[in-house]
Structures are given as structure tokens and as C-alpha cells.
Image 1: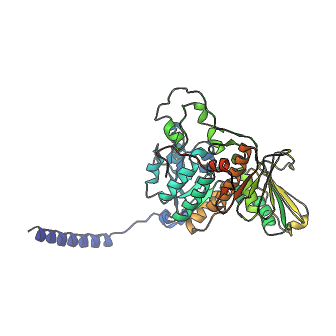
Image 2: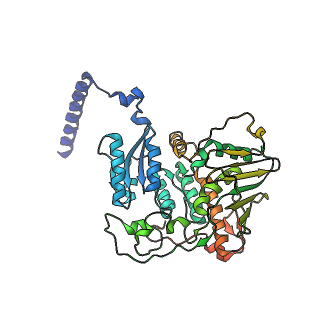
Length: 428
């Protein structure tokens, strides 16, 4: 009896469906012009649906660069601070003229959404590596602000995770997509300067201190500031509002605070590009006379220094070869040892290190599945160089790195600083 009824119901359903389909076929179908890309609109099939995780001051700027792109649909925001969630929702809803931007306190709920293609991660650096790897495992492409990792071990794990999951990852090292920096690196890595001898980076600080611990100032209301989630994988410490904004304990990258990592994520990254994104230096020395020297296995030196720069703006880099040199900074300008190095080219001067071009590179790669300029492998090697330099600063002595295993040679103290314990439940 049950089988007969089931069969009858199926036949009735199919007959009804056929009748309905015929009726629909006879009725006119109205398709909005935006769905097929008329009048400059981007059809839904070409849009990249983006969610934001940790959108504060820097993240708001990044989001503005995403919203400028006609093929981006920003769908959701997650932040531990209620005020930020509301502010970003307001921005997105005003942009699209609706009330559709969703808000989350737990970024895992955002990652569970199957309609979101990519995420912008602009949390504090304490969260960058962990949230990136969880996003990759959830099938999302990632644009992540720097510093991207807390230590050497996490740098390796991040690159491995992106490789295994076949996701697109772009570190927020936007200078890779600015013409004058790109041209300077091109001169270095293509031999136009002769055999490369020295690459210089501006670390913006060469001291290493522990993370810090401010006095407790009560507990915030969880919906306004989720302190436990803010700390995430970091060691617990009492709530203090000074930890929530600015260059706080998170900026140093794990146990070793300050030092090379924050600004070096940009400058050392450019130096790594100049040496063809080869493995990082193998030897690191503490500063002498204001210069910290690290040496690659081919003898080229990475030199970190605060002073001695041509005034070309922030984040200066300099590349010296046997036959020429080039120096560039955030003004958008370069100084060359010889005009002949330009070979008749006109290089655009774009000052102020805008991220728009870097975001566009990321979105194009999301669609084509090509590797972006600030890909995970390049970011990992640049970050490892910064972390190793920080360890030499912290220990105040020379350390030597095996760049096949990314372990320090015969140095137990240095190897203990390669990683750190993550707080539950964020170990994986």
C-alpha cells in the first residue's frame, strides 16, 4: 500500500510539474539588465562576494578599496566590538541602498556562509595567521593585513595551508603593486644593477621587548567588546581598554614584541622581492652602529637601518649591485645611480602607498586563480626573515638559520622562539 501511494504521488507531482513548466514557458520572463551586465553593471556571476573580519581603522581603509571595485559585493562583517560592526554595516548598507549587510560576533559563523567567496582579515596581528588558516579550510580566498604571522612556525603553517587548500592569499603588502617599487625590484632581480650585493630595509625600530601586561580595568559588556575572542590564541591577560586600539601587545608577533616585524613586513618584503623571493637570510646579527646585518647564502646582505636614507618618504628600500643602485620610498619617487637604468621608461609616481592596486590584483586572481603579488609563499619567507631578526635582537647575539628546515643551527634558545603555545580552542 505504501509503495503504491508513493508511486501515485510521484506521478501526480511529475504531471503537475510538467503543466506548471508549460505555463511558465508561455509566460514572459523579465530579466533585469543588471543581471546580464548592461549599463556598466557587473552580472552576479562575475561578482566576488566578500566578508570582513576585524574591521577597525586599517580595515576600514581596506574595505573602502574593495567597495571601489564594481565587481565586489560586501555581504557581512564580523568584529568583537559592537561599535565597529554597526559602523561597517552602515557603510555597506549606504553603499548598496539596502539593509542586507549581516553582522557577526563570531567569525566562524561568517565563514560558514556558502555565498561568501573571499574574506578581508584586518584584525589585530594576533589573529591574522589563525583566522587565515581557518578561512582557507572553510574554502575562502583571503586578503590579510600584515604582519600575517606571529612566529616562524606559523609562517610555515600558513603557507602550507594555503598550498593544500588551493586558496588565493594576498598579504597586505600593497607596495608590491606600486609602479616605482615594482620597477626598483625589477632592476635588482633581473641583474640590471649587476650582481646584487646589499639590500636595505627600514625596520622602524630595532628593540625587542616582551608583550606587556596592563592593569585590569573591569570586564567589558560582552556584546560591546568580546575580550575573550579578542585575545583569541594569545595568552590570557586582564582586560584593559588600551589593548584594544593602536600599536598594542599584538603588534610584535608573539613573545618578541616591537623589533623588525611591524614595518619590516613591508620593507623586508620588498627586499625579498628584489632577491627573487629566494629563501630568507641564513645568518642574523644584532645591531652594530645602527645597522643590523643578515646574510643570504649567496653572500648578499640584508641590512636593516633607521638612518642614512635619501628623503623619499616612509618605507624606504635601497638595492645595491656591482654596477648600480636604486632607492625608493612612499613619495612615489626613485633615485637611480644612472638615468640609463630607466632605459627610456616612464615609471608612474604614485605616492601615499594606496592599497587599491593591491586589492585589484587580489580580486583578479580570485577569478583567474593565478598567484597574486603578495602570495603566501612570498609572505612566509619575508615574515620568517623578520621573525629571525627579532630573535637575534631578543637574544642579542648572532643566530644561524637552516633555510631548508627553518630551524636554528645548534641553538636551543633560538629554536624555542620559533613558535609559541596557542590558547584553547585555537590550537589546530
